[in-house]
Amino acid sequence: MEIWNAVVAAITFKTIILAIFLVILGMAFYQAHKRTKDPIDWIDMLLDKNSNRVSISKVGQFVGLIVSSWVVISMASSNNLNYDIFGIYLAFSLGGAMFSTFVKGKYNMSDPPKTPRSKIDNPD
Image 1 (cartoon, helix red, strand yellow):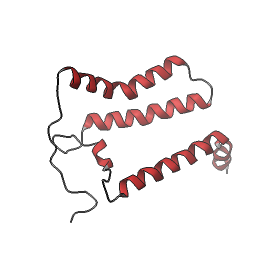
Image 2 (cartoon, rainbow, N blue to C red):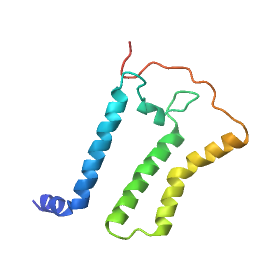
Image 3 (cartoon, helix red, strand yellow):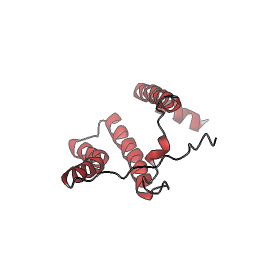
Image 4 (cartoon, one colour):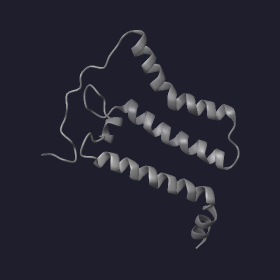
């Protein structure tokens, strides 16, 4: 019974709003994935574009983004978030993509053409 009381005490208005936002965001992602014309394949976030195998660096970035987002949200909800922590969070979440775009543009690099692979959830 103590666990239930702790769970109920931890639920605040901010937590409910965040949960509603995440449900709406999840529904939008699901609709985009199930779209018949130009569907989004979410597994591409974790696969290496050249070998179509799971990329350890992408998985690490994904886990780091989830953990750092949780830290920033919990610090913001307790009014302990300062500019330094938020700046580090933004540099982590946006820095990798911005740096790779900069390098591709500076050295006129382009991604190699990707061969289409069969969908995982539809083996036909």
